[in-house]
Length: 430
Picture 1 (tube, rainbow, N blue to C red):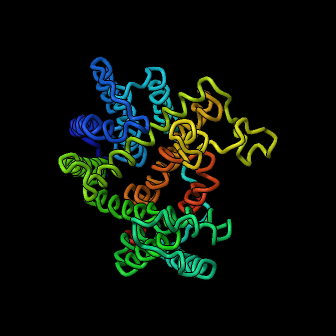
Picture 2 (tube, rainbow, N blue to C red):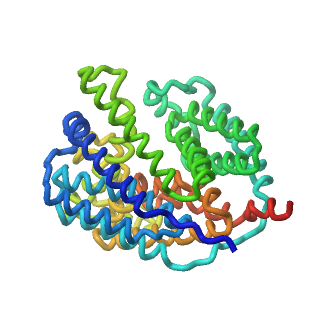
């Protein structure tokens, strides 16, 4: 029997230290000076830096070395949540208590995700046949976009997405608000991963084209990002079955971000520089954690939402603010009630029910990772991780945990994984 593969914690720890150092430098020279008006304060505290290094080391040590879906996504949590929280804590002047809430939430995710569960199975469909069905379904969705919206709001220029997005959404029936996230985060990534797994490049190109066309109709840049992420993770895990290659990829993006920031500062804010570091370091890594801190700070001393805007409460709980949660935080901290300050399970959990809301949501996240880990044992790490990473990243950074299942389709992805047979069975039969 083949020996189980394990990550080299030493290499991971060194890379995490480097990530912390590069992101800290970017925060000091670029994020705080340029984007300080958004709440990126600069308050360097050496004692907090030492504490941050200790916390980071402890989390890496307790992360399972055995390669699998659980360890992959726990490492992703360190990348997307822990290190940015440490940067804001040690360099941005965020309170100790608020940082401890974030770290406690991660510990709960670690603990609950270790619960042994079995992967549910509702059928045993061939993944290739499911891929074909999803290709037809995606094509039908695109024709629906064309039928309802026409080409008047179709746009592929990244610089003009905000000029078309609202009109594009208004031209489509409300049901598309549910269908678009499901297809962009589940259906299209599933299709491209299966096509790559079975070496069907034509279908991979078709699904990639579907993603680009879907972006053109909706104006959501994440649609293309999700499929690129799926492709990158698939090949990274195929080359090296673990998180190390993914982390090296993140480091590469941060190094590019650093040089982009340097050129931006040296060019005195010339427009051709600064966009890459803004997308990767600021928007991708720092903004979601900053919003977590905003949510915790606001709801420590104000009324909680208690899921008053959720369908779960059937309208029986009154919204204490009269506006959706993201718009409330946008109004309080970003000076615009039109800004939707969406955050992940930590900030939204605290907004719903304080610390116990964070505990509830963190336990739910841990349970999701436990089931995804079970699917990983059945279907393989590269297959599962490359399909659901976009949704897990969304769960960590940009949506309420309950909304994740109802609007962003996590339930659909779990059902889809439960419907298919292990793709490895093809090679076994051969």
